[in-house]
Every structure is written in structure tokens, then in C-alpha cells.
Amino acid sequence: MAIRDALQDSRLDQLAEEARAADDATIGAVSSLGAQIAALRQEVLRQGVALGVLTQALVEQGFDSAVLKARFEQAMAQAQAQAQLFACPRCRKQVDRSKTQVTENGVVCDACYQREMSEP
Ligand SMILES: [Zn+2]
Image (cartoon, rainbow, N blue to C red):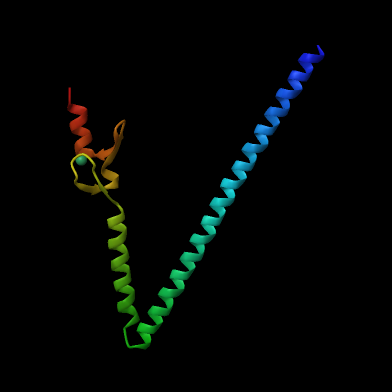
């Protein structure tokens, strides 16, 4: 009986050590993500300040702030539309991400998905 108790204690100690190691790994991963988020926040702040300084300098040089705003909004809309595009790995066409399907072989455009579904 004493041997069995000792084995159980040993196994419990081993499990507790594994749980502590898993906790340490999780804490390390969360800490790393926190550092990455802090760095991204700092970068967003830096770019926002740079944009503000550049915009102010352009206005001081005589650029119309309404024109700058309109050009920014146009460029932003184009960038967002570009980010929505997806290059289908099968047919190489660029399609809107909303016009894609997830298959067991990866993401493809609706047309390739339809072709794949109609294949015997
Ligand atoms: Zn396709």
C-alpha cells in the first residue's frame, strides 16, 4: 500500500510540475502578445502624429485642408477596396473577399468553387 501511495504522490508531483510549466508558457505567450500590442499602439500613435505634422505643414504652405481631407478619404477608400481583394490560387483572378468559399483544399473564388462542386 505504501508503494502505491508513493507512486501516486510521485505522479501527482509530476502532474503539478507539468501544470506549472504550462502556466509559465501561457504567461510567457500572453506577455509577448502584450508587448506586441504595446509596440503596435506606439506605432499607430507615431504615424498619427507624423500625419498630423505633415498635414499641418501642408496647410501652412497654402494647401487647402478640405482638398487634403478629400484626397485622404479617396486614398483610404482605394486602400480599403484593395485590402478586400483576394487572389484566387486556382484561377489567379482577383475577387472581392465576400465572393470566396472555404474548401477542404483552401479558399477559392465562387467561380472555382462552383466548378469544383459540378465536377463528378
Ligand atoms: Zn478562382
